[in-house]
Amino acid sequence: MNSNKYIYGFCIFAAVALASCSKDFLTLYPEGNLNEGIFYKTPQDFQQAVVGTYTPLRDIAANAFWMDEMRSDNATYDYYAKDRGSAARENISSFMDDATNGVTLVRYQAAYTGIGRANAILDHLQENNTLSDSLKKQISGEAKALRGHYYFDLVRNFGGVPLHLHEVLQAADAYLPRATEEEIYTQVINDLKDAKDLLPMPSFKVAETGRVNKGVVTAELAAVYMQRKDYASALPLLQSVTTMGYSLMSSFSAVFNPANKNANVNKELIFDVQYQSGTTGQSSSFIYRFIPHMPNTTNVLGVNFSTIGFGGWDVPSDDLIGLFEPGDSRFNASIGIVAGKINDAQDFTADSVVSNAVGYTPKPGVTAKYFCKKYYFLPVPNINQNTDQNWPLYRYADVLLMLAECLNETGKPGDALPFLNQVRARAFGDGNHNINTADQGQLRTAIALERRRELAFENKRWQDLIRTDQAIPVMTAYGITAKQKYPYMLPQSFTVTQNRLLYPIPQTEMNLNSQLTQNPGY
Image (cartoon, rainbow, N blue to C red; front, side, top):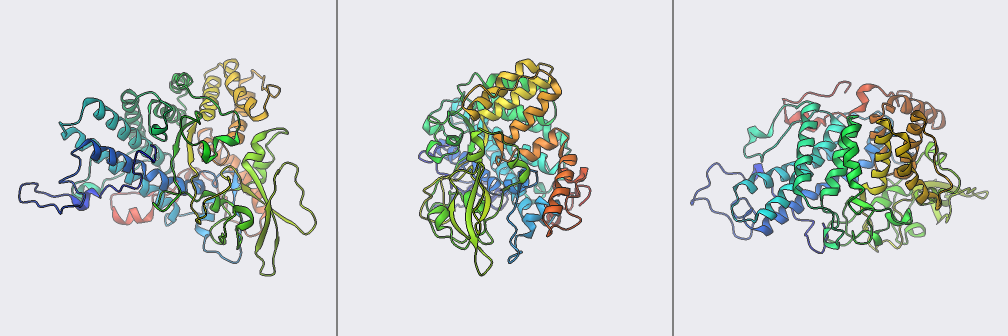
């Protein structure tokens, strides 16, 4: 989905608000306004509608790191005692969130916005007799792929949710009870299977950057099967992705550099959320979120902005920092340090970003704060909170590690090693750090560690812990250590139970829909 070809910011109207019980010649539509009476007619209409279906990906990505990384042992936050307005976000990290949490609400609603737009496209596509078969195939494939993606995001985080498969045309249709997890997963798999048959192979053309294709759908369908521990079904899908032209970038850091975001340059990015700096509302601000609280960011970003109350998120945990081996280029590419001082107002004032965090020890009088460096690329545009930084959803290194895991779990540990070691060779710049064990248990541990190092801060860790049945023991142990280190954490924090593997259905949705039931424990 290239910004030169598509209009990202296009807003698809709400179906309920614009629906009409009678659509006859007496129905008048204001000229110049988009509505159902004049829309969904031309190829351009449908293309714009598809673009609108991608837009909620940005809303999810802007909130997902709180739920996917900071819920895990990968990341924590820069505690700021003078401003406690961000406690709701901190509560996600310490397992003290509830149904009123605004972060989970945004994610839930964004997913349904995308689903509603996909449903409208698919319904209107059935009624249209003017589009070519090839265009219908493309549009249907994209809409089904995105609907499957949004439902996959919902079911992993909230469990069974209302299953909407058609455009909502009247208020009664908007309120459904929760479907079961099994029903949602069945729909996700069906949508992705259909999309896989409809969509073309990746072309690696600039104009197709960020757009769903067969490679995207195949990788995600494999991820769905893996989430359900169906490694045998995921395996051939992942093997097929390796034949589609993807490859690792030579440099780990280069994968995330906005200068390399186009598909013809970066063949490692299978699917990423697209952002564009400027004044059209399509920019990202991740690095502003990830650097520490400070009254002036000039010495870090080159532009003056206060991140007090805004930044300090996704801070690398001590646990993650200690996992990297000597010589691993991913450490310095993923983890950064801001050196500075605490001023008289007890605020952190930054002097500089340390050029190499490996083995860094601050000088006397210097305060050093870690931050997520994976999305730190200068210069940032001279507009606050406005960058070109995309967010990766699936990339080829992830696929290689998924493939290694599937091979190992299906009893082929020897076959898994080349894919695991391909990722490690890029990280170390040589083949001298290969994993050679053929023991399934040892290799399972090695692959899990490699996923942490390779995919840190890409919103994979929390679901990896759930998928491998490690979330409760790992986060319980992590919580014990965290509460010993951070005196501001409450005794009841990190009470990690089976119920906490799902987030609550947002209370706002519960209030609107009396047919909803809440997840246990909330």
